[in-house]
Amino acid sequence: MDRVHRGRLHFHLWRRERRLKANRFGIGEPRRRERARAAWALDAILVPLVGFDDRGHRLGMGGGFYDRALADLARRPRRPRLIGVAFEFQRQPRLREAAWDQPLDQVVTDVRRYLLS
Image 1 (cartoon, rainbow, N blue to C red):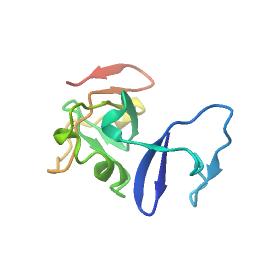
Image 2: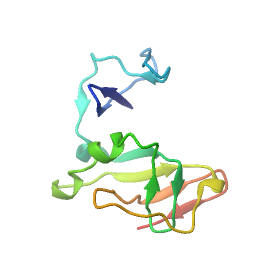
Image 3: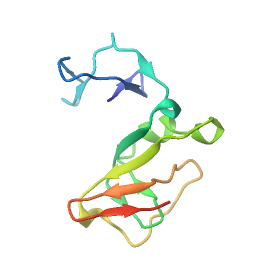
């Protein structure tokens, strides 16, 4: 589970029995007592999005939290599977890509699953 702390996205282990704390947007996050995990050490990351295309590019909410958190994956010994979570209507013919974008490996929608890499 992720949480934003000082403008950075951190990934934490979360157990069902642990209560979440609402952040400033009202979104439940793990409390700080859980140790942060490196993104590259995870097996998979579910990535929220506003739009996606068949090349694996995603459009986020504009805060850049996921872009910054995933920026150094290419330099790491392994990379988690990046799985976008969306509704089918969010699929776009083509999105503009930026140099810092991390392509998704797949997207799961309410209609189907797209394998992108």
